[in-house]
Length: 218
Image (tube, rainbow, N blue to C red; front, top):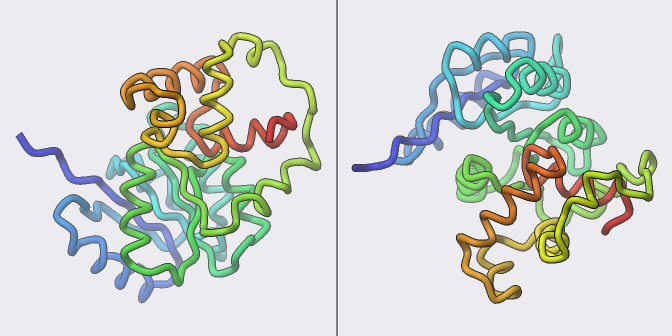
């Protein structure tokens, strides 16, 4: 039995960009475009109507921007919300940090190579974070301005091994890399990651990175 294709929705005010993006995504057997919209104001309705796995969200749109749209979708749908991958023209756009804080699972520059974009969609759908190359540290430094240096009680629930794995994940290591470094199976690492996110009440690895920066753990 073959896996169902990853369902992708696009929200961007540039029709030509959406068209080109749709052609790139549609060329892949494991991806399918299920809907599109020209403004963040239509994000929630589009998501509820098409049930995408991943939403490609322009960060800057004329009526409702990508930050507001991302927050609305994530707050209204909670665990049922799709993964959001923010697209921006400018590297380290200040709005990107706000979008990630609102629930986005990462961001890409609009001029990224098609192969990188396709890989990012697959990675986000699988639960990984995606941040434009070389931008991670500079982006998340922004969260230091509001940081609380002491983690709360939720951090005390983590075992020593879970804290080690959390640190490695926050540094950008994949499950396979963590498994090799910790002498564990990849399945065991996945189990640990699920428990870490549950204990810290975090949605995904991007929020884990934010948590670590906010509390001085990186």
